[in-house]
Length: 472
RNA sequence: GGCCCCAUCGUCUAUCGGUUAGGACGCGACCCUUUCAAGGUCGAGAGACGGGUUCGAUUCCCGUUGGGGCUACCA
Image (cartoon, rainbow, N blue to C red; front, side):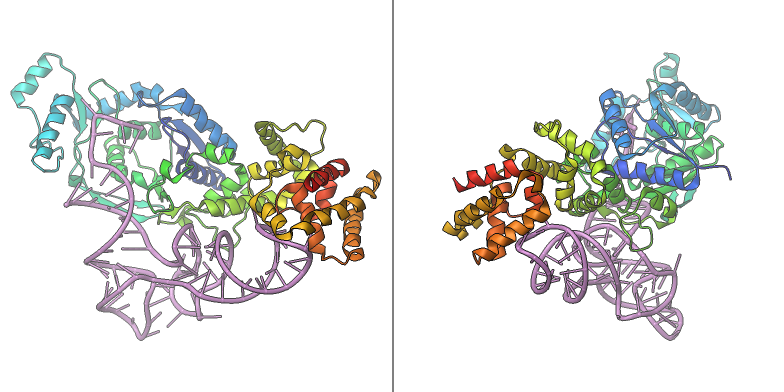
């Protein structure tokens, strides 16, 4: 068998949604795994809703996720002539027919049926013009749509994730393949393109299952062998409904803005509906490619859990070397408007990255270490001060005194830890009562890296300044 | 309504007829510790229901219930 050719075919009518991104990821993984070709095709035939801006956002989202394509992007809108030729070839073979009924007349027909409480369904035997009227319109050169004469036979396929799925032709109506303006309808365009682009495996969302029998019928009518279909499950919101705007962030760009790393997003998305078959969840790109198989894709829809994504992102943050985090952190600092010129961020990032869950969060912490104006006292910080009362500033004064005694060239975590412990010992204070006030004075909150490291990262002058300010 | 798809802890999942039904997130407890959203240990927590098939069903078949998708001269 020749190498597989797969495609991801988004329509540029919106942003790149996580569902689409996951579909793209599965296609990409499959292509990598099999040594196949990953084709990107932009389905921009809906002129009303498609925009170049959306196309750009989708391309950016894929690049951000590292889902590089081998061919394309092709733009479906450029192949109108081929779509039309394919539709007309069906007409020539007698497998499709002209329908002179106008869209308005069809709408009226539909409205009438629905007004009676019925369910409208196109039926070639009941919904049609009289032969005379058809002849008259044809003679008058009126525009017509082309309908596919769906054969009354079973259409079945072995879905790579679902197994055998079958439909009866009679449950499909004679759907339109070419509009009266000469443009192809979705199913016709897709089949025409997939044939022309020699696509061997169609990996797409579950919601396309009902399009598949129509497309297979079209392949047969065109005398072509259908590709292998793999319908991957949908992604749902926390309430079990199809993921949508009201669930919050659904666009890949939203997660980029929230400070999610591409590697974490990719890893998380891969595990939504697919499993490597073992217990290791954090996996490199190479490991995922190595284990990827269509057969291991889940049939059931998956609920998107933002909490687990954040956890996973936190894992990547902890494990990534600080150097790799510097660029995204600097970018975020820029967004926050924090000057960091000439400042070595690596020690700061190293100190705080284990406790951060997003780049945004990480950058905020870095900002608070290098810029005193970025320190905001949180509830816990206030609560601690209130709880300790007078002892709070008393403790800080003792620390201030001890820290002043530490020379600038001796200002490192080891020396500082010794100095802090000495304060506790000589004044018979609990270590926590000495450390916590300093943490609150320096960060505004009760959560941070170990205090000696914190002092080292913030620096001597700034640390003492913040302590001075806290004492008041 | 019709057609189609689906069904293991709250969530993501492992299991491909025999397991004390395993792991992860989240949750709880404990340990470590100056604190923690870090690390470690432990715990609670699932086969929707009813029939078959079988020596034996989470697993295979049927039905019920529940959820989802499609049902356009949209993609």
